[in-house]
Image 1 (cartoon, helix red, strand yellow):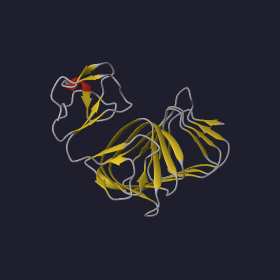
Image 2 (cartoon, one colour):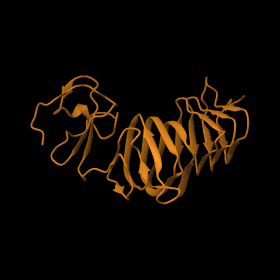
Image 3 (cartoon, helix red, strand yellow):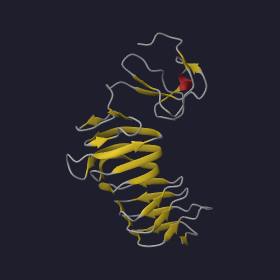
Image 4 (cartoon, helix red, strand yellow):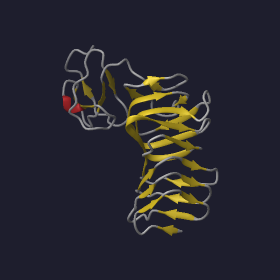
Length: 231
């Protein structure tokens, strides 16, 4: 086992054999300027932040033990996740549209949180479905999505986004505001403290009104008392 004793900046990162650990006691960061190649062996991510500039390339015999890590794609053109991988937190966000691709026929699992914004999201082969299984919270907005099947997990609520076709278990909404119920204990509908603009986020957003979308998901399950007229 090779364990880090400091943060690791590296351009291309390849694991061929053995175990690489970010050090469970310290969880040092790994900053990959280009791509990661998990050809064989094991990557123990612990609670580290792992930034990736271009691609995530995992082969069949390469193992990624996610721990409580954050994998953050920071590329400015096109990033691709090759083959099925389970992430704890997966983030790919920008302020200008870039491309995110997933291998057709494979599944990306996200157990804790998914954040996607300003992305054209596609399969590596048009018309070949890629699968997404989310079991945690989400913040997905300003994305253009095609060929995705998320039916094995939580519905993906894509705010201010476009359905480019062949998507399952994605909710692209009706154009109104999207509000998430985030009360951990019983609370009133008409209390702004109980509403957020992201799943599991901070309360204090406006109460949903006519034409808005109200979402009750697994992030918080406090009882909602209807204390007003709901359209």
